[in-house]
Image 1: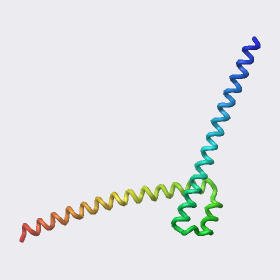
Image 2 (image 1 turned 90 degrees about the horizontal axis):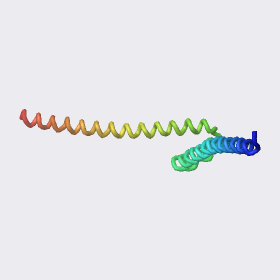
Image 3 (image 1 turned 60 degrees about the horizontal axis):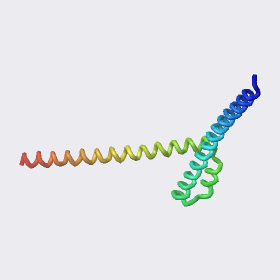
Image 4 (image 1 turned 180 degrees about the horizontal axis):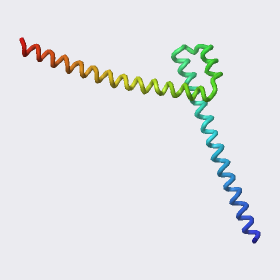
Length: 111
């Protein structure tokens, strides 16, 4: 095998190893950034809703990354539930207004 072929193969292997390393590092870096963002959001929530209670802040500091992920999932589900409740509330209000109008027209027709 020629020396130039060996060098080309060596450079190719090094390039592939570099790309794989960069992919692994960027994936783990993305996880670290996501966890830091989640921790910051939870701390902001505690600061806003509980006036920065020190005990709660220390609990947030002690939570693992998995615990924070679970907490963020719960908060997301609560937000989705609030949206659904507001939609249902509007539908109930519309149905109530419609029924009220029908009853008023029925009573007006009977009298």
